[in-house]
Length: 418
Image (cartoon, rainbow, N blue to C red; front, side, top):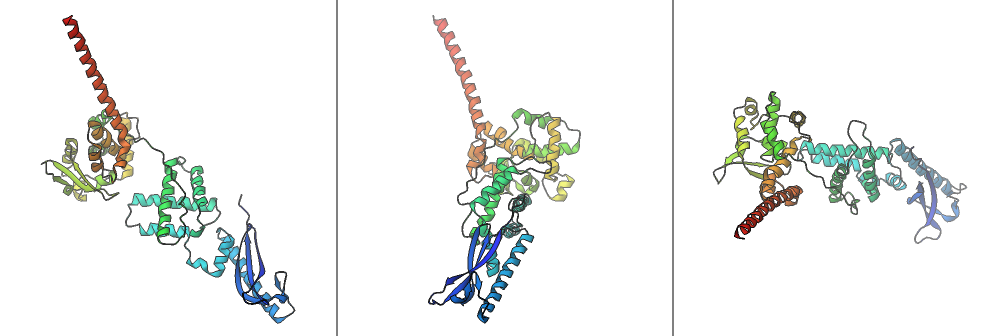
């Protein structure tokens, strides 16, 4: 049920400085028990004022009443327009519109449009698409919860943020998608925060509504393939060419740690001979522009060799023939089913597999893994630290067996001596 807006105007006198006989006429606007006042730039002698209007028994009184009526009608017209446009009606907003202050204010949706337009050529489409999704939810929130089409940036308070968060958590999708989890909600809040930060830097807003807000991401365990699962995919004989192709791209990522977009952008020029005389892969991450230098393992080199001379790759000037991320992940689901791997097989899983099964589990230092993944901070790589714990467990198991064996040998020697 939509909230009904209560609205009224009244006119009153405020004593003018330096004049005991005259007073300034003020208009008071009240909306939902919230009120504001402003001068209508007219004075009147106090003896001509009675109960919110001028006495009509003089020419001066008639002129003042005609002007008051004009002001009142104009404000009421703005009020009706805001209701018709489903904008958030406040006493302050009506006053600002009447005084022309609104022309200097930026609205929230105008800010979002500005942000997305400015970053259109600097952000990858996948990232920009996420901002468009956040924009959609902001519009839904304004319409369904605030019953308006837009708000001024000056109206954004801490309450707006927590109400938006609650709206996202309670949102029931109309399609096949699941309700949002905590981290998805936090990502939308994070994107809104970045856009509000633009307004703060541009001085379009005086106070940051996020100043007292704290985001809370839940730690998520990163999935990866075990050594046995990776070998199963590598050795599987696929009769369908497209599945062989997708398997090769996936396995290549498992042995290099490159993301989908970075694999698709590779050209023969990215392969070079390093100072150690071995083949290296040198590129920049598309997402962060961080440089990446990866010594190529035999399995990765084998896959590169397999696609040398591929007509489609040669036509595109790339190392491998390209395929859309959507199709690739769809085919990976088939591969997972055929290999009876009960995991959500996505291309990004290959990157996690490189970090865990291929490198950290085999004793590669986390600093080296971080550099090969192109992470800006080693803390980003530390999400894979549980693998180190697993390796420690395996190492200690071997140590127990070794110590147990040594104890057994010692007991035998003592038995012989006795």
